[in-house]
Image 1 (cartoon, rainbow, N blue to C red):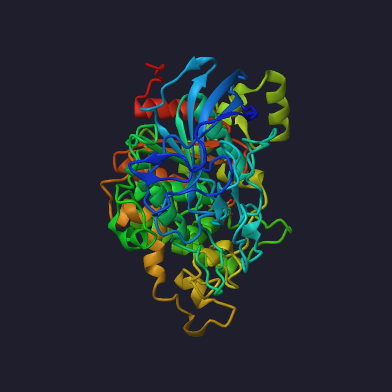
Image 2 (image 1 turned 90 degrees about the horizontal axis):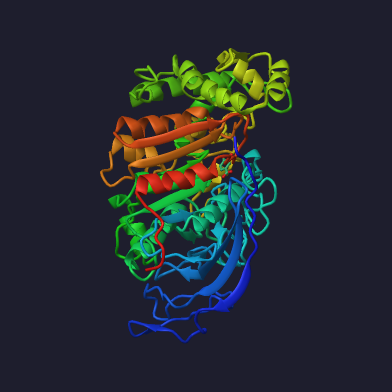
Length: 551
Ligand code: DHB
């Protein structure tokens, strides 16, 4: 498997417009891309200033190891709503390639990669970026550092820096930001437009002590960003009908949600409240890496998958709770009535056959690809160390139990998402303006250990779950405006959520007739993106785009 760090160097070689000088459509704009402040039109209108860019150069090393010199126009920290709550987060950056390897390129009809940097459902900001791929998350970017966010096991990844200025050797293997930075750089070098929206996230608290970033803020903001881009068709270069979203983990979840929920009316009031542009928020395609989604069913799916794997302490999670949750999963899965992907030979997917399905459809092919790419001696070494794998010279086979043992410790306790003590990041994501952490499943609420009166979820929770779950838009309300192209990736060692979550999303989309490209990266953990070049090629394929020279 090709697996290289993507490097870049940024050099400012000119400034496209003088701060405050540009006027578009009679509206004065603060073109302060070079000064580092969030810019927006002074009257709150949402008109993009095509001239307010900084000209940058960067060197992108592609997945073959070839360096590309890219000159691009960079628009920084443009507020994408007319009634922002916090411009640190509700702003986006735009990068448009104008010259690649000495040849002028015209990106006016190129696909638009909408790359979010959401991690852990935390706030993400592009306000301090100095070039493409420079987002930060976890309250970075100056204002509103999250307070009151629980320090649960789930927050390990969210607190990782997403700074993309130095992706380093693991830029495409580990933290959320690294993977996405890779996509942005490769997209730019392929001649695509890159839009990077920030978004509010859990934990943000205003001076009145109210939380303003919990669900559904993240998806409302990303939709507003899409609307801003579309409303500025012809001003922002790129094809607004070929927006391809990308995100990892919580960012993969909201990327899927963006694709599934295009133009859904259930967001209308929320979008109005922040002054989102009056335009469609449907997107063309979804890229989702290890999406942490379908949260209200994720506890059951987790126990079905990892329930008998020990915790990192060596102890088992509470098996009574685990079994309860596993049976909830069986019920849910039966209700979904999903069929295995085409060619899998699997009919209805159930709690009884899902292990075999994952094995045959994903795990064994993933291991086979991995082993086939190794040298003979490396393969021998691997097989000697991993005796659970049988290799026939072409294909790897193993049992589900062998696979589970190979993965080892489960990352999360039980329940993994709706923690009885409200300590999971997701409890914080479903908090309200005045309550930091809340239960979002009946089972979590019933078993609450924090003294919750009534032991039931609050009345607004069901609607919040719909607003946050792509499966709602694919199953309960099949959305005709959804994306029809899905790129889904996940490391086989990723125990941040159940493997079923991605596989269900893929199966449902494909059962609806959409095009799905879903595979698992062998022996990779959370946040892996080991085939970023293939994603870029896939974008060209599904959008039908061929890079155009300057006319
Ligand atoms: C992320 C990881 C998690 O384990 C989780 O529960 C939510 C989000 C993340 O990396 O974004």
